[in-house]
Image (cartoon, rainbow, N blue to C red; front, side, top):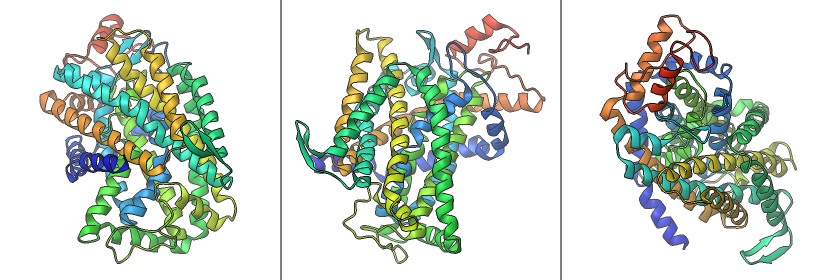
Length: 504
């Protein structure tokens, strides 16, 4: 089974996908004239504005929901795997994919807003919706929706729960083995699985508003505490910082076999962590109440920076500055580390040992707690994304009970994932990430060629910015954008009054 999964993962994550992700990010950066840099002040301004409505969540809540998906095990165990299999230089390529991916995140999230719908009193949108409406290819939208439901409902939950279970097991020193119908595990993992399932059930049965209200409190707090803790550890070893930068940059361009591994693992784990181009961000973006689609596109571009440049970098520097890592299978003259090769890079062990190196005895429990909240909020985001795609499927296939099946399936996957092998869980997750990235990036490139709606929205928003306004109008027909039914209807109903009831 593991050999088969690894073979499929290697096929999905061929060099073609790696360079497609990088190439798409560079292409959209040029097309937006590097909006991820030019519009950075506007991203910050938008974070403090906006409020939720009956149908939509606020801009900040949408950011929190999307960050709950982006900030997860990829920021702790994923960074460790990138270093363990790709070397320290993989961190550089994670930075590159974040910078370029911010423009991709703008494009896909703006499309999510442009082509969103109102379904049972709440906003819905995402790649399946914009692929169907912008390209007129409903079959392609269905392929993405089915892939996403499978990945988010069955594959990804196992990865997140697996990381939680492993971290808790390591933190408490393991425990007596217990035999279950699902295999042999330990009591800490079994108890952790039960706690995760119970907490998830309480929240996901409450709908998107309950998810948004929970994540808007937990996500900023957990990210801030984690980054501050990392800064303390790095600050205690400040004299090594120049050498770490040199190690990362020098190893990023390792020749021969190492170069491919460094780029491949850096991009793979970068996309797994920040999800730019994967097609997950547009779901939360579409749920936001905004005056103009470009606003949520810019906010989601900012979320990529938070995920990779802050949280992932915090993990990488803790690991590298303490030397608690090893590199497997990469030809490099500068890669090193002090840990034994027997320690699994797919687990949070690198990060836990890095913290333990500085604050003895606290590494395992501290990272276990961080991973619990990171992964738990990510599971909530996964459920919402899967739910949105089930809603898309239900537009055509009216089968009662689909949402209930999704909820039970995700809970079962999370429980099972808490006791499965880390390597298999990550390999399955890689397949899901890769398939979604293939489908979404090809889709948004095709939409660009068909009419450039996200670029037109950006130009329109910047024109209104230059006019000095702070209340924005979006008229898709005036911009030559077809299929934006929600915005056409809103404009017809509201006239010169914006979504918050203010006169324009």
